Image 1 (spheres, rainbow, N blue to C red):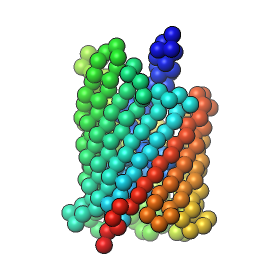
Image 2 (tube, helix red, strand yellow):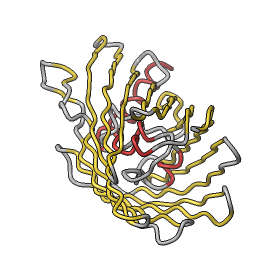
Image 3 (tube, one colour):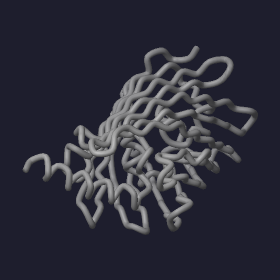
Length: 276
């Protein structure tokens, strides 16, 4: 009976994920989540998890990050990931790993390698991701997906970002021609002052309607941040806080989804070796 209940909970969550084009995505970062996912122009140690095109603009130094998301209070739908980001004289390298699901009935794993570089005011990046699905009743599925993105810094206050997730339309299974979602994202960021960032994005799954997102980050005190954001079609509201004491990063996000419930996300980071 317990396994049957877990099975239906997982099915419900996966159905919700499919509607939101979540399968194959491991967007680990409470900062990103608190701004409703408007991260196409955000440069930080989590860049490889979002718009890999921003990775080349990250030059703080060798950094380690980790994040955890609890979805709707169901531990079987939890998401965990960690990564390393290392700027070098040839470009910035990112390594990502993640796992969705804590049951043998269904789980996903991802391992990715990313590279980004900057030429003048343009940053470009690409990642190759190995993804594995484990389904108790159907066995294991393995695939490779490719992400590509870019960032254009028009000025210190105006930036544009764009990226494609699953550029190669990786196939999950041949029988039904089931594929990972392919996403096209275009984002715009306006930063009138150093303490304020306003982001807007349009995200389009090639099989679903476009989704509009708006996010905001404000720093009322040094090393302290307040964030909020919304998504439409379907609606989600989010807010969160962040702290950046010295080499550490601590972020929390709360996401409200009217249909199913709430999500909570925590992420941490540490600057291991600042770039000289």
